Image (cartoon, rainbow, N blue to C red):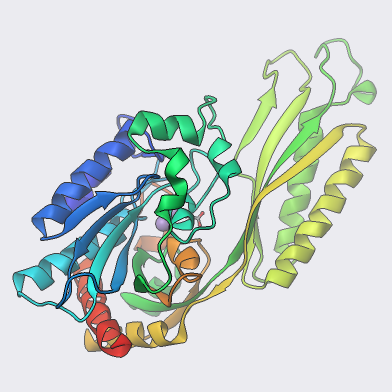
Length: 402
Ligand code: GLV
Ligand code: MN
Ligand code: MN
């Protein structure tokens, strides 16, 4: 918990936690975490996209690894447990194995991924995607709000975009992946449970919508003669809210809106907004997204504004490995807790890793289900249970995978 406080203080912005991918604060968090890995008995390295890995060998060196971990980047004005908990708990697990002189059949590798959030480049789950070899070079050309590309940011931070293919691991090199994460929702707390075994991760789609109107004088253009990009976008955003509300299990969010030229006395000529839509059922989500696109075009036509939609990322829903879910349940039970199962509404690196190897997740209760908010909070007792359950699950996977 003290380390989570230390990590939580490494930020781009004084007075709040903002640690976006490849920012000086993110690089500092990698260096800090690297030192904790070494102290716990691991050999460390970073890959070209600056995922950090710490390796604790098994009974014989070079064996396939059970990978455990999470991400070090955060959203803007974040809580200190989303991502950080999974990385530091994984280090605590290895520290305990090393302290007890315990070597497993498998190596244990701790992973600290980057740009899981997509809060700098909108390319979320980026470095775990590179690990499984599905990063397309165009993703590295995405620019942040200040115009810096992933490639340029990597060069400045000591990474190497040109070598991105070298991030990819061979099938078989990683035997399983396991991630401890705060639930980021209210289910465990409502059930009075500290831990849960995650069964599935919702699918998601992310788009940028650009609405083009016509700038004009706020004092002279009559209301009926305007092509206001912002009022058109407002109608679109409220329509999106109605659409998602009507569909069981579907959620949709507009988290960023940019208004140009952005002056009090000028009718907005251009608005860009993001859409993040998620749900457990890919078919329902795709249908809703198609309906959304039709609604946007209808509203644009009615209001005589231009519209362009760039759908830049889609991740199908993921069913986590039944064997890993069972092992996680057994580990929770071994800690004296009910092995409750639940799905994840949030995206996670585990959802990407599941394409490479059997993967699972362990959720930990957080106060009032609050996350992506500085009010994120967990208890010491729950964190202790979480680390013990993660250690038990690693041992369980080691036995099960043989
Ligand atoms: C990550 O937190 C996501 O689900 O957006
Ligand atoms: Mn996270
Ligand atoms: Mn997050």
